[in-house]
Image (cartoon, rainbow, N blue to C red):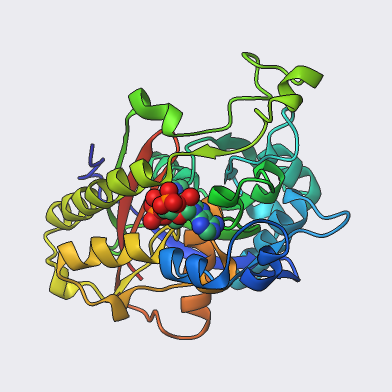
Length: 333
Ligand code: UT7
């Protein structure tokens, strides 16, 4: 499903921010925790190290820091925000939402606030929801955050998953423009039939928190990595083609790809199929691991901050995650 054209209103990113924990966990540190080694992790994933939340830090800690830096970048105050959307799969609490907790911390009292649950695609889904709101309320200023304390969902006895993930937060603020720039086309899709390949089944109402549930380790991420890999590549490729076709853009016109960062081999396979050189991919996976919903806004903020992404550049974003969910956004910076 590509979407929502012809209104003459475009969503423009006016500020970005990110915040990562200070605590670093290297592949060599992991060798002391589970039966793994640096070579396996690096060759199979491209990850060298990841960041983990420390004592007393939680999702709202990093969400707030990333949001305040995006607000400063946009020259806005928290009260200027009309809406806050948080994409996450590791909210601090069941109730309230991560977005409401963040709204309270920021003092963004004029902002409606809600979470989007769409696996690792949560921030990208959140941006598409925000973009749709902007089409009808062009003056809105919407903060879209991707934030995870995914280490709280990781089974530190399961080497197949614990080596992959990291914590952190990224944020972007969008508003409307009547010029053709900013978000040019979007596409989001889902397939719930294969949910068991990537899930956290405990802690919800089907398997509420009980001693038995915890003894069975149902509160942790389970993933059939290989299956996810094989579905991620063609689906990310296809939505990339869809948003490019929708905006009348060809692969050689793309300046930068800012993808969800789960595995370097996935990214190499996708860009190879698109015929786009891997040098155009903004990669943060090596230092942060898979930060789920945070990965795209964190990478975007870094590439804008260090001057790689410049005004007028065409930026392609795509993601794939549990659900399954996947999607792409094409924007002109
Ligand atoms: O962000 C949401 C979406 N998530 C993804 O996109 C993740 C997609 N999947 C992947 O990135 C990859 O499938 C993984 C990195 C998770 C795994 O790579 P793989 O090449 O698919 O490896 P595999 O799961 O097929 O495992 C290969 C071998 C197995 O041993 P045998 O059966 O060949 O003897 C595993 O037991 O590697 C073993 N293995 C490990 N060895 C050392 C699995 N994890 C580890 C480990 N250290 N940490």
